[in-house]
Amino acid sequence: MAAKDSAMASAGPLFTTLSVPKAADVLAADVRERILSGELAEGSALPSERQLVEQTGLSRATVREALRILTVEKLLRIRPGRGGGAFVHRPDHESLASTVQLVIRGQHIRLDALHETREAVEPACAALAAGRRTDAHLGELDAAQNELMDAGAEDDVPRFLRANVRWHSVVARASGNELLIGFMNALARSIYTATDIDRFLDDDIRRTTARAHARVARAIRDRDSAAAKRRMERHVCAFARAAEHIDRRELLDLGNDSREPLR
Image 1 (cartoon, rainbow, N blue to C red):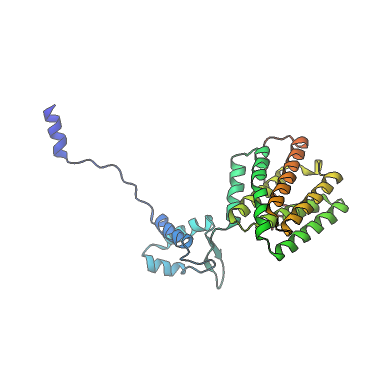
Image 2: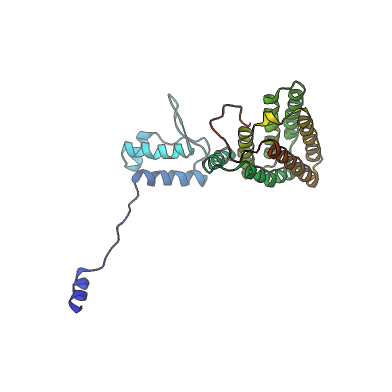
């Protein structure tokens, strides 16, 4: 036993296997941090590939791999041709909406869970919108509402639905909260895509929707946060009950959708 201990001592200390990050990952991490910290402004151009190779001492293949990583993360936009290159894109509510939609699809989120989330989030959007809305937001609400009513009168369900989604998008944007805007955009798009709304959006439901919108918009216009929250909560809960009654599918079907997205 003593001989064994002596042999181990003479061998010296033991080290574990080290994992060395790839050079492309190191460069991507450096650029990522500069973008997220604000050092690199939205829309600013990165040095060309040749300049990055010269400045970093890395190979062209390594630089290209780092740029590819950041492009996939949507932190860079690549413009081809003369005057093109890699341009900074800082994450915004659209970035969040895309990520949330991927989670919804990847985790096969149930439709009732989606409605529950909307019931929790959208009344808060309406309350904030009442305190932060601008005249421009009110104009957009009116325009979406007018289109919704025209589409309902013409029995144009697809157009009605697009106007409905835009109306809810305006309420979210009027909240001024980037996180809520992103969540609401993802929820509205997913519900719109997944639900067989043609089966239950009859004349009565369309009229009820238009009246509910008018009441919420009135509270937002009057800067009455409590009323806006209460009326929006009543509206989205009623919509969820109608969806649950008519469309009893448990899982979302969110394949590639070509219908018009939120604006």
